[in-house]
Amino acid sequence: MQRLLAVTATCAAAALWFALPGAAAPPQVTVIGSENVIHTVADMDKTYAFYRALGVDIADRDVLGRPQAKGKVPAPGPSSESLDKLCDTPHTMWRYLAVTVPGAFNMELIEFDVPDRKTIRPGNQDPGAATLVLTVRDVDAALAAAKKGGGSVVTKGGAPLGIGPGKTRSVFVKDPDGLFVELVQPDPLPETKVPATSNVIDGRLARTIQDTDKTLSFYRDVFGFDLQPGASFTENKIISDLVGVPAKAQFRITTAKIPESSARWEFIEFKDVARKPFRPKISDPGAPGFQLRVRDVDAAVKAIKAAGGTILTAGGEPLVLAPNRTILAYDPDGFLLEVMQKAAQ
Image: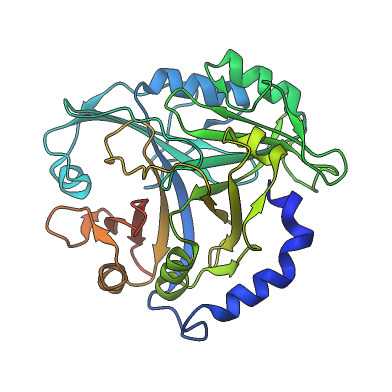
């Protein structure tokens, strides 16, 4: 999606960037890397089957360094007191599985067994919606695998669309929990060290936001994201058909690089289309999030609150999840952030 707009965005991006207030100020929090995408699911077995069909398999270790059994989905178990406080979900049953997106990052699949969880399916234009973008060698094979694994096609016509440049093709699907997944086959394919046996060779995160200027200010000022704001709003029927929004919808895209990390985000704002904020609780299936590693998690708590974010963790203070100190928070759009200070930094 971003490739289609790359040529026209440059001049307008520069103008918007310099218009943002305080662009020269140093970030309030030192980010030293990124960890995993977070994805709350309704049924771990079904969601794992979907991603396994795409070639996203169980990671050797989870975020705390604990080994994971290959090919085995864990059974539900009781949470700990620390986990209950961290997620503000007291007395819950849960299960957790880290899977690896080849060439990119790990994704944490989390299932909470709580009585008040709700399944809410946002539209792609709704602020708070997220998309896992997977770069693949063969988009037709990836689409067939996604459908076989229980995914549903979003793109109008049900088949990949040519989005340029060259013969780049892309299609949007939803996983069993309603998370958007873009399967894109670039032309030419980028260089990769991912083995030829894997169709997936890279991944990134895209997020729909309410207001570009406000969201970029938050991530630039608090975390020092390297931002490349997109051009002014653009209407493009191919992209509208691709992501499943009305043809009249306009959008603009900002690319972001996380400090000390190879992880990339896209921020997307829509207009001229009905939008409804998507603000799920962490226990709701389809709720997305992301982990950041920082040098000082206490400084992060103060900066997040001062910039309009909200602390989710009970008590509002970081918790020790040995050997790390961690906090859960929402950014101003209601997107979940897990901010972690690892031990012995």
